[in-house]
Length: 280
Length: 349
Image 1 (cartoon, each protein chain N blue to C red):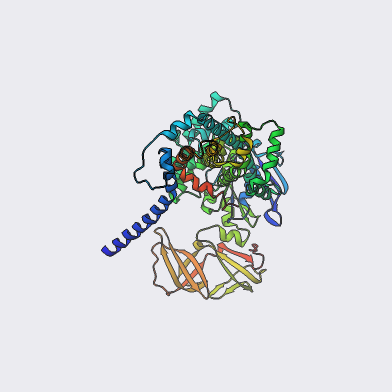
Image 2: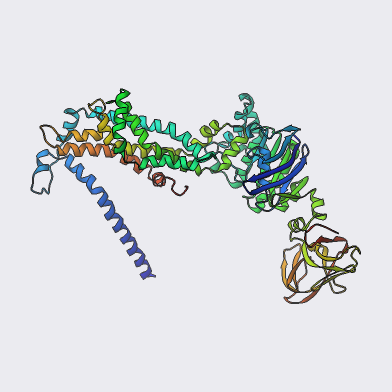
């Protein structure tokens, strides 16, 4: 009995050791750039190793006072939220049709929607630039909203579809015999039932959007439309050289909100990340 | 309250037959049970009445009016589903009120109707709960309340009791029958449980492989089965069906001899006898075999005899006990013998 218990304890210890190592491995860069962001600039570029770092809010003051960081933050938030709203408005009805109606080519259309995500973004970069230039939307948050929405639409549709497939058909049949129209069924029965899926899809879309760099760089040319991700690039040029501590701090600020949301909904997230692969 | 007529109903999915040539006329206020093994087409037939499935051919009429093209939400029927299908995000109250809202019942009337339906199903105390906070039986009753809240033309119930345990099932059975009698609403009920069918139905429709095998009152179905399928499906334990041959008015199979049959019969037949129409005898026996199993249940003892290669079940006296392999003779009640054509299974005597 005693030996059995020890084996159990040992295997538990090994398990925690492995998971702990992995967690440290993942978190190390985050902690590292937090430490860079909270040190004076001189200390970061010194070639000698430093064992006791000096705490400094230089970078913090710099990003808020010398740069329009508030504006970048606002641009990011507006563009991301706007894009998620557009995605949900388009994806929910699309997912409903894909999961509920029988029509010719349904599965092909579903796969086509997903396949748009597999395309290399650079392929459409130039056409998209001209598209927005002709529409007069270059350097606006609107353009960012549309681009983020377009990038994420496939994933959002696919995740919501997988949640909809899980809703028993009986619920819908019941609502129909109770006298509900399709729109009522969607609004009153299905959407409330898949709320966790909608939240998951939204968060995943937000993560992709906040990390988006290529299209944002293409569309934004002034602080009018600069977002956090592009602002990072601003600390690398100019007469000041590369401002590592500011980069690190901004990166941390961009990372933190999403990280907290992910921690809060992690239970749903792992499910959403499978993209309904099981339910082909 | 409505009369429901199905005529020449067929349902096909490509090459797969769901339902073949179903014809039945369900009277106003009647309680009709569709009974059959799973996959026999009974649920599909009901879904066609509800409008959730479109017949490939044939007509569905309610009170004489053709319903084929009428959408489910415009047919005035209420359905109870096997999985209850309660809306998980709504309270019991909201669930029951849902059909009233959808059908535009004036708001001031809604509350009274919901409370009345909840009262009839003994749910008044649970109106604020979400379905997830209810027991199986309560969920069942909530589904029932949602169906009865708006006096529909017809109730359609798809195996509503199959997820409940045996005791609860019996209580709910009585309640469903009571409510149906009280509201006088035409009811179509689908089940694979013969006890439910026998106890609830005014008429039973027995289906197999998409086809109706027999329509009749529970008594008719029980005492006058039209073929071996119906005979074997109704009754617990089921009717004994023995393949054998009739020659000169006598049925013979290994270990079995039954004389004095109608003289016009001859050739291979299947003999049917219900377990309750047999008795253990020490005198003249129709069947001779050895005891294979004895199962006392309290009010009756089930005795299984082995005769040749076949097993034979009878309901013996409650006090009957015997060790295995005891030779035993069985006498049949000659008034309750059934004869079926060996090939088609149709009743011939």
